[in-house]
Length: 102
Image 1 (tube, rainbow, N blue to C red):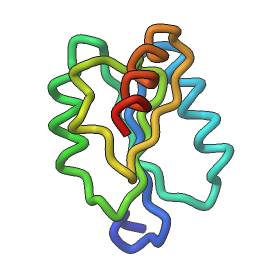
Image 2: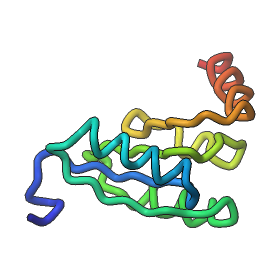
Image 3: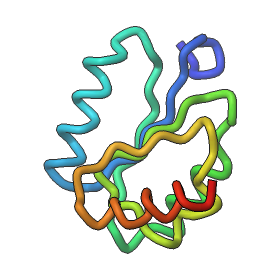
Image 4: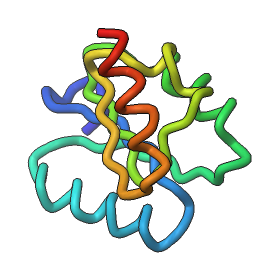
């Protein structure tokens, strides 16, 4: 089945390490009926991540897994269809900053 033909298509971007792989597995288990297109990236590929996410169909939910939030993500990736799942303490700073501006 093509992603366009599926009613629940999701884009996922994961860190290219074990934490990222496990995060993707959890997403697959949590959403077993979804069509999930994923890409694993390294911390050096953040410009590629931002470019790829901007090109994703905004009707799809987009998940960013195990990639610590950083200044480069905001405001471009602060959109309703994008969800971050991360465990890095450094992400808390950007969550707090974003909450203050809303």
